[in-house]
Image (cartoon, rainbow, N blue to C red; front, side):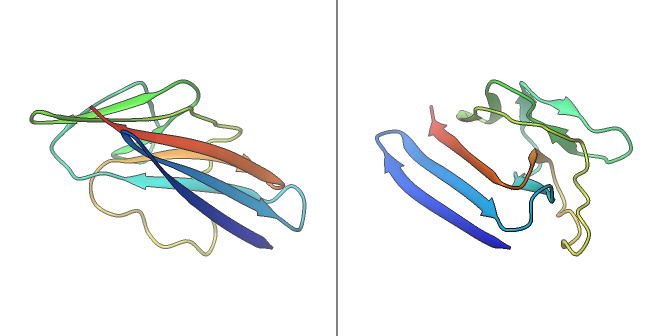
Amino acid sequence: MRYEGLIRETESGFELTVRASGTDGVPLAIEIALRAGGTMKGVEAIDGTPDAFLLKHGWAGYRMDNDLITFGPGRAEHAYVTIRGAEAKPEGPCVYLTGFTPFEHTLVFEMK
């Protein structure tokens, strides 16, 4: 397997392009861990996993106090976020995007 992450700064945040290739059909999950205490919109809860959400399409927003971060677009080709060999989910809310290899997706993060 080959994984690649490319980051590009933008005027209001950054873009992250993730690529994975090698063996076809391998499930993967991108985990976006957030600090506890904010409010989330634009995501769907994952049954059986507390504080875990899928960003299936569109944009997510996470507000804490006066700060708002938005990110997207979403992608959810499956709901399996406990990938074998991965570390345990950190404390606090986590948003996941999922897919299968070969995989390429660009996420845009903006502070508002």
